[in-house]
Length: 468
Ligand code: HEM
Image 1 (cartoon, rainbow, N blue to C red):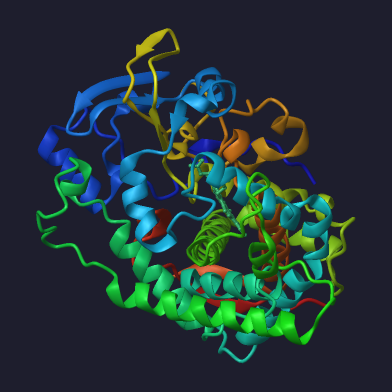
Image 2 (cartoon, rainbow, N blue to C red):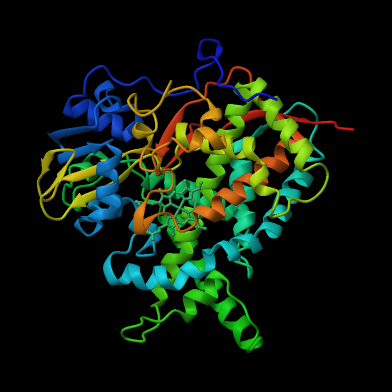
């Protein structure tokens, strides 16, 4: 079967806000950030290698030049730290876990947790991931043909199930659905950028209109406390039993210089970091992948043929994963058009030079996958779904730093291999058993709230695929 590049004239344009003609003024920029940050980019952002500006956020550099991106994340990484605004959004819930820690604190945590994500460990997680996929197939089995479901919340639920079977095998001590809901509510409220936070107004000024997720934070505190005591008890009851889950690693981690254990706060922060960073991102990747498949029935038929042939009614093995090339291309193209982490940012510590421009110390440097992945100089027909570009031969010509759904350099996503395997296994199993179509009358709108998600969920029509 041919995988030739589809003709864009005949193709629908996946949902996305149109870039502004001109950069917005300060007020509409702040309003846009509050409503939906991906609506604030102008046409210039999608065409220039670097856009420098001075406004309510101080000096800002939006960087789209792959060489400069490599410079920021790899070559001169020591000069770029995570900025105050993202810390303000993430730290109330995630504390100083791996995602938000800096310097030595980060290094100790990364070293302690890296062994949980080696290719060998990730391969061992394939079986529990397939169990989660089976669980989902069973969960949908009793539903009536043509039933409308909210795919976004279904995907959140199943990716949390994966975390429970892999890195949290002693469980989350709470109903996973309640955990998923609390994390969603936390992202919703903290991820909405309040104008006073953007301009870094003092804390005592009330953030009118912003809901502080007090209840959710209390829920997390209590759940993590119970998880730590359950794990400590389990370790006492099973002395010498080998186990290498996230909790055990965190409780056993020692600072190589001081020999000190991670504090309880640090353990708590990481548990929430892994729940926060590890389920919604993959859930959204799957949601957008299935949305795009529904929009492109011809490509979907090819993907169905692939899983029917390779997966059949059996279990997925390690060797089969790389054969699912169309599944993988769909996932990668979905993360290009809808990167779950749509904007990454850093602050320049000292002055530097990027793409031939002087960057002053203190500049906020933004590398936004949303913009980069739709940049007109880097992609052919950037706003269209063309998964063929991620098929093996074509993929080689994509610049490593033009496509960064998982970031890059030493702070690249620790869960990248885990997430790709999980998304591949789940998508293959779903496509093998079900066909999802767009719910008539629903307008899909991507909105950024820490992760990029469909506003109001993703209602879809579920049908069983009947195969001989
Ligand atoms: C499709 C799914 C995922 C996407 C798109 C994604 C994206 C990212 C990105 C872009 C970063 C870098 C942030 C930055 O440089 O500012 C990151 C970091 C991180 N991710 Fe993921 N992620 C995904 C899945 C996961 C999973 C499954 C886990 C854990 C099980 C995870 C845990 C983390 C952690 C702990 C960090 C911080 C790493 C560090 O700073 O050392 N992520 N992720």
